[in-house]
Length: 395
Image (cartoon, rainbow, N blue to C red; front, side):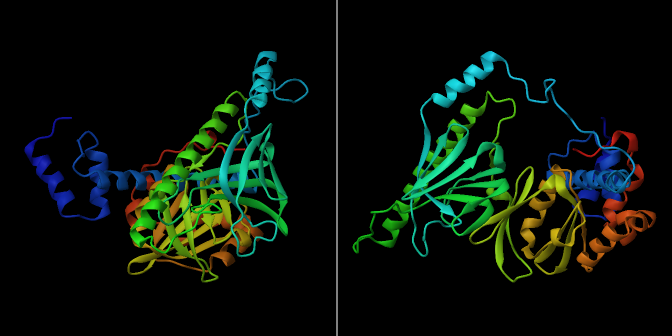
């Protein structure tokens, strides 16, 4: 696209002077052929606003699917007449050979929730792959995780603050320790049993040893995950698709219980890491997210799920403002509709009303009724071109 000097001066003025969003909107649509390598963040933000306008326009169709209307389209896959997944004899033989191959194991592992009277102690065990399950073994304790029962799995490499860890979210709860749970973590401990610190060791020397141990454990964890993936590649529907936790998308916030908690956004999930356990909110289950800029230097995040249940409303307060860009980026990439504003109504009451009176919610215009959208993103609404018949919910 050829740009004369007059247009280039206009472009430079718009970008340097940080003019209102309406002008950026004109820039985004009128100069798409321009190389904006000098202003990548400006272009990315406008692209996100354009995407968010499209996501908002899809709500009309999605709400009809949720509350009644269009039938859902579900991918059934290739199955035999009996409904079972088809595998060739050769593929089945290869899978059996893999199962009989050497056992994959990870040492120096502790489990959360704690088991076997761990109170105050770090009990170290081994995590193995045996046939079609993970088995955690320590003194007198065996915990079995069947592959078919694993819904989500996550891996995070360690650093100076957090040890390397594996997290599993299960479909059905299992007995661990004194209770039933769906969420299990395995930590690679920094100091294996029998390793002591001598008095003459300086803090600097101890820190160096700790960094070396973390590095060794990270290598061991990576090798373990790679071997598990390799062993499961021949399955038509491989379990344990480990999502790698990227530290750039981790952030801290405060729950209504006043507890400060670490969160992370993966490509498919919002993961909440509390002190002794974690839980998972799949991005595909999220209806909308509201990002409220209420105080200088921080914001509040409210997550509403598509089941419109009050208990599913997740409120996260006092998130550092520096995390806003990363959160918007990951939500947008996950096709999640979010709003940025300075509004914080009683979300649980709103969700309750939607669940009880869905027809009224749709008649009032859905989420548009609450006027949550910022003016800059709203500019793109009139340009969205959504064909309702082409929009379907994932099964």
